[in-house]
Length: 337
Ligand code: NDP
Image (cartoon, rainbow, N blue to C red; front, side):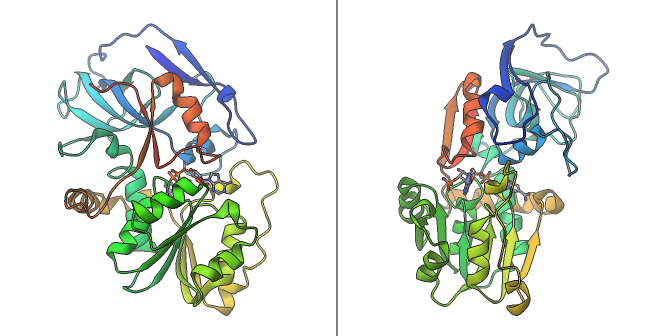
């Protein structure tokens, strides 16, 4: 059983040295009476929140990884042995699993069976999984969007951002995205239907860049990055604008976060800025799943993935999230059957 272990806590950005590959003997049967399942992992998800689990102190909503133990994350897996009446051999499931070829899952409460078969399995880690649900809950529940509003999305070509932009277009909004390469900008405009997009790395003055795309201001900012982008967005918000704080990926591992100078805009412009966790909205998950699957079938939503092949490439793929190496949702393929 090939595995990726968490090796050491970090303070800055993650590196491949924080993880370690090993091969261990595997007992591929579920202990009788455990109520668990044994799965073969097919696809694993690389998500920015996992970096938070690599810090020793994590006074947040989820406990840290343990050094020497297998890394955990979302995955799509096939059941190969079951001691649980709700799961049968050959069921395909998604939920939290290990970064390894085979995992024994004893806590099965979070596992969902994949019932929709006409959609690529890896999409259950993106379009139809946690990132897709984050886009859905964040956009509809936190942003309170109205037709015709002006929407700005950062990290717009990523797992979450690409869907926020497309949902905003379906909602009749004007949408601009920022991303970190010209290829990503091209994808935003020509594949994902954003009205405009720009490469923030080519913009010495983000305030001026936003003024160029939003001469009359921004109604909704879907915040994925933080730092100087947030500061520039604050200056450009319209009165009664909404900022949904989904993530601050530029601030992960930054020991001296960039100062935000424009918070007074919240008062003068009566802006609502709200942080959220997708997990607060799980009651909407079934509705999300059927709506997103339908949009996909109708060709109203497309999804861009970046698939790394092989468990041995998982650490590199994960580390790449923090320098923008991924174009679209970063997934690792362990096995296709
Ligand atoms: P992405 O697929 O967007 O990958 C991360 C991207 O962030 C990179 O590709 C890169 O794109 C961008 N990035 C990395 N470092 C920087 C930086 N220093 N400055 C600006 N951009 C940077 O990830 P997700 O879509 O999965 O996640 C997006 C955000 O949503 C993250 O902040 C994540 O933590 C958050 N999130 C929050 C959830 C919640 O419940 N609140 C749930 C899920 C995700 P580029 O090339 O454009 O720079």
